[in-house]
Length: 359
Image (cartoon, rainbow, N blue to C red; front, side):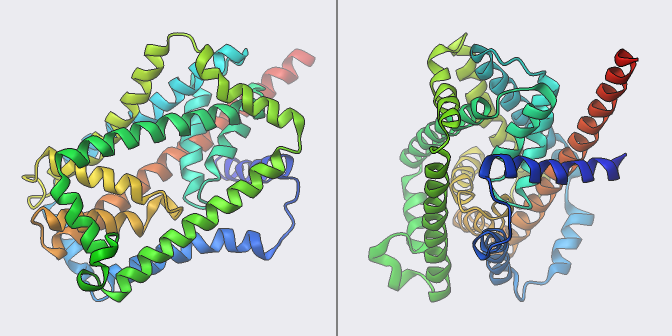
């Protein structure tokens, strides 16, 4: 069943993209969009971990790590995605779309797993899944995703602003070390660090340009535009707005504890405190804007830098980021596999039910 589910996902992903972006023929531009995120993330990881004795990481992983805390951190990690599904279902309701909560959860699980392969494809894929399994309008669903991104961005900006005011000196040191403070770039940062920081900025600008071009193409289809606008405007018509805000805040609270609880997995991070967790969480969240698979590379670099500022050695910070990011990525893969199996089972059950009715 798992093999059929994987085959079904691949065919469905290509079908969804073909419907909504018209042309799936090979081009160098598409190839670059696929290869570049892996190349950027891989080069940054190689730069960070070259020469680092990975045997130290395996020793910590096998002998020193407290696995009960890592398993406990999975609960808020999964809860964050379930809250996303609840919020998504609530947003679709005013437009006459009522997908099952289980399908919404599975679509979101699968979207995060798919984005590990092709960054940012998850938004399109999860809308297509609802269309296929729940007959939900693709343009309306995509419009609600635009709304989600706007709300999440505002919440993250608010969180970053509050934490920055509380820990201004730490952020100031971070900007100096990473070269983001232009006045201190030449004296406080290496040429390699400047290169990767600049490369991330250029890559973000390029992806924004491609997104603009893609949205401009989508505007040519009137029905698509109307569906998008209806989705974006759905927020003002949503029932129980306080509940929507609770879902939105709860998502980011859950994400934070999904990250912060991992501090207690290691002796060298367990005493850092919640403020160190908030600062590194904010910086890591901003770093994953660079579209590499699950933020690999930029996230490691940003979080490692903050943890060193809070007193960890370079080796301890590198060990922490490598282990935590790897395990949390495996969690996304596991949830994606679960979603594949569940959606495949639903499809098989529906096919059996349809055939029995026709007979």
